Length: 462
Image 1 (cartoon, helix red, strand yellow):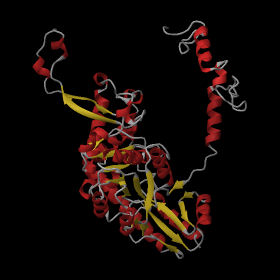
Image 2: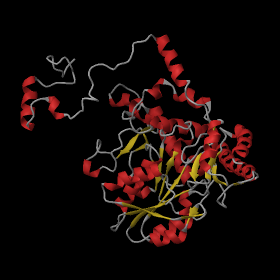
Image 3: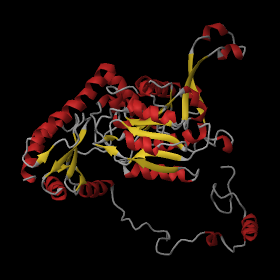
Image 4: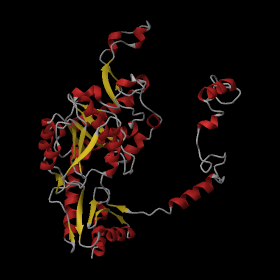
């Protein structure tokens, strides 16, 4: 092995003792250990303290540990949604050439994966109506944060305000504030009215210092936003970008973002392709072509071969035979590893190519009609469940007088915390969102349990 140091026995420590001593002397410390301040209580002492077991014993121990988990039927939503993932997705995505692939830097050996990612981007372009979609972002929160940074870069005048609804999920706001702190952007909020955007509040909050207005459809409470065109117009009147948060299933049925003035669309594309993972996701990011040079992450593009490799090497063959062959490659990589640091628009180092592949497979499996059918089901299931809960004495569902998608908030005369706890004790999980409010999400994954859920809800809500 080359490049290593025989004295250390490690290829990863190439410096001689003399070189190490010289560097330590230059920084004014006596040993390598002095460079680190690790408390003794957490310092590795060379032992992991893990008992050695056979494979059979290890399997038994894991089964015992996992058996302690409670099996709950989840009616949870608020940003994490489960739809049935066909076994076809698992079988194809688990092929070794996909699982072992990292970022597709070498197009000559990754044409298949690059084509799949190109198709994924094309699907998002079709669903959003915008011209550019990347592959990809970490999750919804980081996609939102990157949209704020993009808005600050492209705005023709100064400004530092990012407007978000006061109902924005805390974890998304936390990531947004973390990303925008360095560039000096300020995250402010506007009020919601009965689950949807309060246009008067938004108009009052928006000024010439606003660089981005963010709204969601469906909203955090599951309502379908009715004022998207007005929201976009308010943003554009102040030379701000309009960013819309959504997901691929909702996009199949609701207003096309481009048609209501959205400049950027973000969200979690892993509502298809992955079961609920509570942290693992796939950040959707689409925008207008005029911003293509400011897009974070990576773009897969398509071109044509012009000369056959054998002809180039003088090995015979007709170069013209290869003309017109489609070829895929990463056409835009705007992170500092690929371009000058001062020109980088993102430092994203791990894309979600494999998850994007799964999402593309799931969308392709459903087809356009299947995707619309699934989206329509998200409306009817929520409507039907809300109606059944509303028939229970002491329950009002939904609280918001709106159309809903997947989920809704229900008001209970009894305090919400004990209701949530009693439901959990009986095997069901819902969100507590207020002293007398719970949020319920229903999809094709848990619809089979709706009858039992309603019966138990009636018992615990007395």
